[in-house]
Length: 78
Image (tube, rainbow, N blue to C red):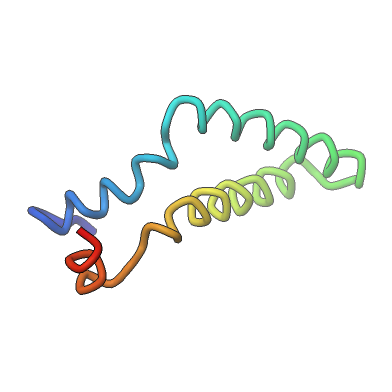
């Protein structure tokens, strides 16, 4: 799956804030606390990694979601 041109640039701009250096560092602290809590609950390492992947996906999606608007609204807002 790839994209080109303006569509690619728009998608990249939507995703970039989620991967800012400070934000990625914050993910580390959040994920460490989450993994510790799940370990205390008795989950296996494999289960914890699966849960961490889902947690990270939710965090990144939540950051990108407010920025996702239909193209017609982007033109009006600009």
